[in-house]
Image (cartoon, rainbow, N blue to C red; front, side):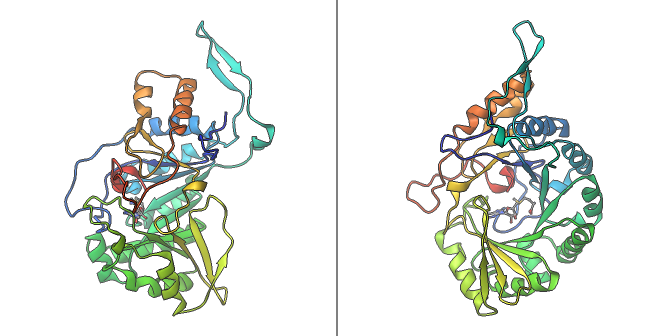
Length: 357
Ligand code: SAM
C-alpha cells in the first residue's frame, strides 16, 4: 500500500525534525525566552521511521528543526538516509502467527513502482549559522539540496529579527559554501512580517540575481510562540508581486502541483523568486506532506491540533509492519485543509519551532 489519505492525496514528502532546540529566536517564530523543549530521539529511531515510510512511498525527506545543524551526528545520519531507495511498495516481509518471516504480496499498481535506482531526495532547512563548515561533508554524505532561512539582507536588520548579533556574515558564508559544495537548487527562505522586513522585498530580488539563487518569500502563518499573528501582519503574495514589479518585471514559471511555491523569474532571465502563500492562496488540496516531530510524533498538518505517537509504537516493540499499519491509519486522519483567518480557526497544538517547518 502506498500512502494516500482519504481525500486521495498521495503522501510522498516527509519532514523530520531532529531537534526542537534553536540558536536563533526569530521574532516571527519565538518569544525572546528559552521555552520548554519536547526533546529529541537517537538518530537510529528517525532512521527506522524513515525506512518504513520510504517503503510506503515517501520519495523526499527534509530535515528540519529547531535548528537541525545543532545536532551532532547529522552528517552520519544523512549518510544512512542516503542508503534508502524510494521504490514505492516492494513485497514486504511480515511476521507470521508462529513468529517466522513471510512475504506479503505487493498490492499496489505496477506503475507506482520506481526502478530501484532512484535516489531519495534529501533536503535540509537550516538557519545557516553552522552551514559553512558542514555544507561539503553533508553533500558528500548524500544531501541533495538545502534551503537557508534569511529574513533580511542587511546585517543590522538580520540581528534584530534573529535576536542574535553577528549572524548575517556567518549565514551568508553558509549560503556560499552550500553553492560551492553543489547543494542545488539552493533556496533562501524569507518570512515577511509587517513592520519588520517588508522593505526587504526588493533588496532580496537583487540578492537573488547577484547570488544566482532562488529567494522564496513565505507568508507569515499563525504558528508563532508569542501569538502575535493577525491578518494585518501578513505581507501577501499580491503585495510582494506588486512591490517587486516596481524593481523589475516578473514572468511566472509553471510549477508542479504539489510544489508549495509559485515561481517567477525576472524578465531578463537572471534570478528567480518564489512565493509560498499558504494564507492568501492556500494549496492544501495538493498537500503531499507529513511531519515527524523531534520527539517522534506524526503530524498530518502544520495546523493539526493533535499528534500521533509513532515513537510510542516503537517503544512498545511494534514490528515494521505494525508501524506501517499505524502510519496508514494516521494518514487517514490528515486534515482536508487549514482554517487560517476563519472564525473557526483553532491554533495548532504546537508552535513552528516544536513542529519543524
Ligand atoms: N531552524 C531552521 C531554519 O531556520 O530554517 C529550520 C526550522 S524553521 C522553524 C523552518 C522554517 O519555518 C524557516 O524558514 C522559518 O522562517 C519558517 N517559519 C517559522 N515560523 C514561521 C511562521 N510563523 N510562519 C511562516 N514561516 C515560519
